[in-house]
Image 1: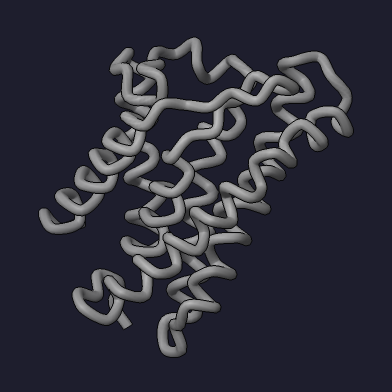
Image 2: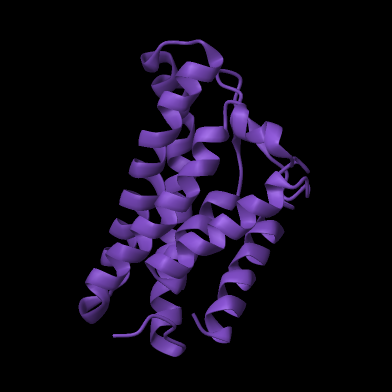
Length: 180
């Protein structure tokens, strides 16, 4: 790992912290807030690639775990990992990796559609596949209730995937960080 890799990983952990400044919106059905930080997950994987994107999430979550209030709403500490949103938080690592992996696979033909698909598959579908069962267990509700409650996130997450696709393709053309 080069110094450049370390700087890029730290940069995207910082971007995640900045995205946490936007206030969370909590849906009444489940206790998981809508935040801008899921956009950061898509961007980390799509701009940095699988390995560096996932490592940026590991660094960010380590900073949260030691108590820094970097999550939306000023949350931090180990306790957040045991709450209803804990599955989503841990899923950020896997989601960034998968978005990055898909962007790397599409690299030679990377366009807005491919970047959007990568963001949706990794940043929404996979993230929900990890987060929804976690909500069900922690909140003591059925998987169906957790799934239904999470559907309110879909429109916003699709908008975030569009934004991520635009940024991923723009960065890949102007300052490609991922190697061909």
